[in-house]
Length: 153
Image (cartoon, rainbow, N blue to C red; front, top):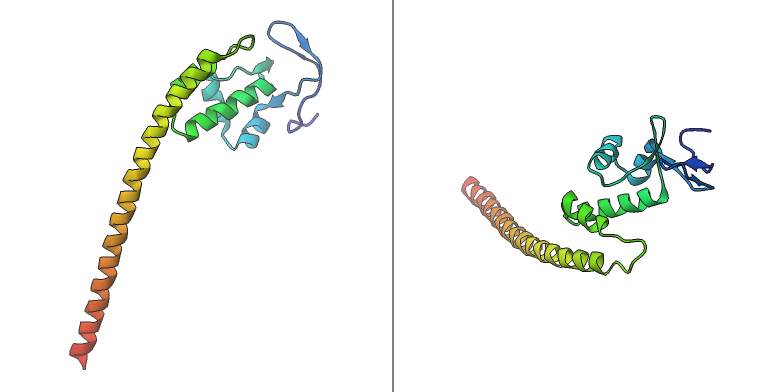
């Protein structure tokens, strides 16, 4: 089987359970799929954010790992720290309603939204200031060119 292929065979987990037909993805394919480096995947593993299965030294990622990585990348994209992302993911209870996880996630999201909106306002102001400075520079350059043409004549 090629290293790029998904492994759709029986896989033995660390607990010895056998999962029939669970698709497992190797580290290289996982990195390629998400557009990240192998080092990044290993870093997230070291931080306890994902926990791939192992077949010797080969890391094998499950659907759950893919879902967690998708959440990690989304969290990073919107500005959450890895600690915040881990905290929100660790509150997940597969047997419960996840009300606590949802509440914490919503609270953190509201705070982050406020921070992002403030950053946007500051960026909008900076863009307007830069635009005005550029307009002034263009005007002065045009005036300078016009005055040189007048003095040359």
